[in-house]
Image (tube, rainbow, N blue to C red; front, side):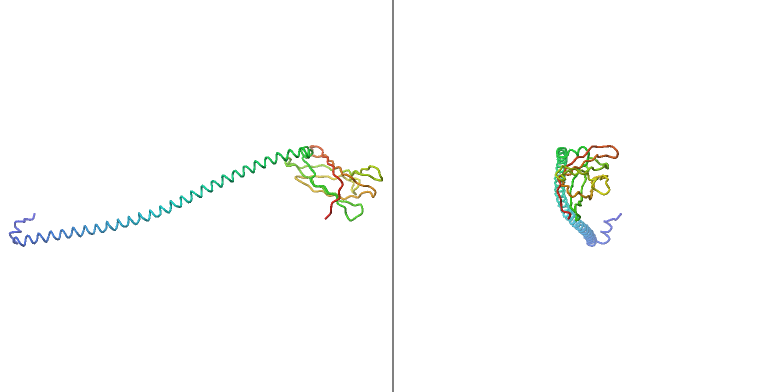
Length: 234
């Protein structure tokens, strides 16, 4: 342990106090230097924290803006989807209503379609370049409720007059093969048949009938009458 009295007697009071003053000044300098260094480090660290905080604040503001924009876009997309869903539902309801109306009118205007599932959609008679030689065209349609294959034979009769007398001819008797026109199809079928008319026979109407089958089970009978009207072959 340092004996301050011996040091004071040994070096004298002035030297002793001078040494103590030097020690105090050096200690104060060290304390001030360490404090200043620590303060500088703290200031630097504080500036870094402030800079990081500002960067985070800017980034957070940008992210918040993006979230707001995405929220608006999501709301617009949801509104558009809801409107589209409503439009689709209205269209489906309209389609169902039109199907009901179509079924009703088919039953009223074309009862044979409801009974047999078969209808004649196209009928045309064309005159060829040969004298008294004609071409018959038919388009057969299937009712959408019946998905199976339909088959049968068409019996076609021409009604008119010959030499001033009512006369009828079957198409089978006017064609070379002399056989009925057979059909077998699903959805639709186009048929053509050429035939020759007697020179003095004037046709007034064409009556088409058929027994309609679904496989081997008879669905019903088709009967349709058309006026004799020639159409262009072009």
